[in-house]
Structure formats: C-alpha cells, structure tokens
Length: 178
Image 1 (spheres, rainbow, N blue to C red):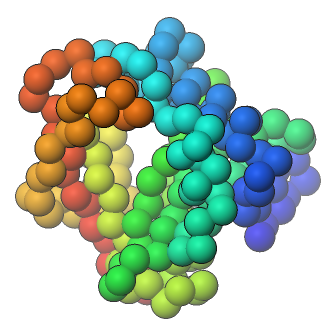
Image 2: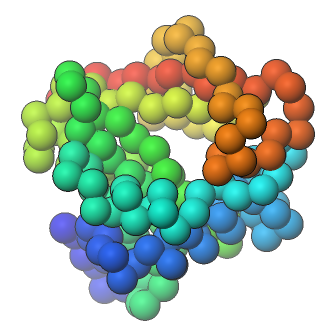
C-alpha cells in the first residue's frame, strides 16, 4: 500500500494473526496498555480480542485489516469492513509506546482512503465506548460526528471483556468521505 524508509502500511495476512492479537491486547488491556492514552483498562478487564476474531477479520471477504510495520514489528492496525452503504472502522490499535506521535492519524487517513477508493464508500462509521471522552474528542478533531445512536455493551459475552462498571455503551460516530 504505502511505504517509507522505515515504515510500511499493508494489508494483513494469516501470518500476522498472533502479532495482531498481541498488539490489540497491549493497546487496550492490562498494565502495559497504561503506557498509552487509548487504553480501556479502567473500564474493562479480560480480553479485547482473540485469535478467532482476528483470523475472521483478516480472512473476511468484505474487509481488510491494515497494519503499520516498522522493521519486522507491527506497531498499529485497524480493520476496515465494507457494509451496505458505508464502511466500518474498528480494531484500531497503536502500540502504547508509539501513541501520541501521529501514527494513529496516519493509519486512520489510510483506512479512509482505502474505503473510498477500493469500495466507493461515501462514509465511515465506528462505535466508541461512550465513557471514552478523550478518544471521542480525538475522532471529532478528525472530522467524525457523534450520531447519538447508542447501543448497549454486550454484557455477559466475555469475548469483549469483563466490564468494571454497569453503564457501558457504544455510540456511533460517522464521517463523510470524499
């Protein structure tokens, strides 16, 4: 996709699954995630993803998992999925040691271009935990708009983590592309 002297952005393959699981877990859960600002460690315990979910994302016919590689190390990723009338953005993770330096913004831009150019998507949607005010503000600075559409957190499904509070929910954010 794109490349610089030290950094490559490409579509992930099956050989990347274990490294992707490790990257996503390190960015969102446990003590290592606290080195960055995007963690959910105060909201959720348990896993953020697993090998089966990442394998499905990598092999799914209606999407792509984009990775940023520096040398042989994956330092960021996201999933972009083609849906009926839009693209969906998810599984966004930047290694905690690399957060705050613009890498996430670069990958988000690549994901938006990918959705627009590969699928003709007119908008990108995502869901964000409503309690993540700082993260929502970051997306708003990138042109995303809160829709007010809120869906409940999947309590009882440990694949998505173990909630530390009972008021978690997701809000849909949207951005027009092009």
